[in-house]
Length: 364
Image (cartoon, rainbow, N blue to C red):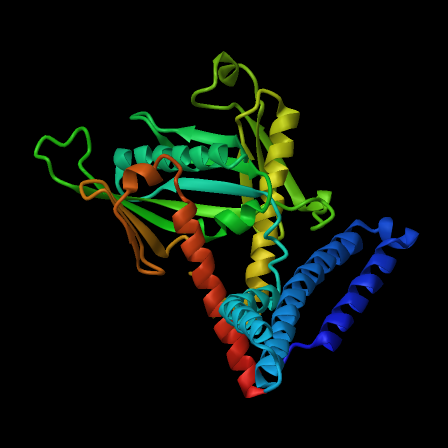
């Protein structure tokens, strides 16, 4: 039972966090400050939902007390009946909102992302599909006030891309896009198909949370940096300067490259952004592997080999296989109308996590 004492404990914790964040030593420690601010925001969110729930509980109890009083006048009883019905109607939704708020937040949710899309099976048609997915995410970003910027690109001769890497910046970007990692499959009739047969092609998507230098340490001596001449579209400069950068992180064998900028310095900075994100993702996967139960509670594994979605053009159908979601509005989705898909994935993920939390509580 949530009561006033529970709310007071939360408010006391919030005050303690405010005091700690105001200390000079904490302000000088970016990692500590970020952790405290994340906890502070989480506690404030919980407190808001608890306050609403306590208010509803008090209203229900007060109304029931009045209705149980045989001496209460008719007008007061009618008012109590109305308030009781209203509070009881609001209570289940408020209780669920509080349970969701109590779930441990994903520390990466507020981060920007780096998205990698690579052509899979299907040759030229797969490369064209990579271009379609890039355009889809770009439209979504534009419609939602997010900024998408290309970091590295490998064009296909027939159009589209063999691979494209881009960043997306804005509010809670990782929270919105984190379920996109995996294999995306397209079914459609290629323009070069004379028999009208439907072909199946695929592309893999990886969504990496972008991290700052303070989030992860990469030693200079652990890096092997190569420069080379950029290739592909981009203007005459790609043939005249060794501006492209390839960085190898020796301890992990992780390799990243960037050739989209004219400046070698800018390409190196972009490549380091990708490298930090990749190493951070590897570290998070290791942690999640140690917490198998928490891992199973997520929507999909994020593994690129996992087929997560099918885009069927002849039927104008999108199917997300993880949550059995089917929408017959593929034309709108490809124009960036992804909110319905993203919201369904988020809500399903929350339901799974709440179930895990409930099971744990029952076992303890």
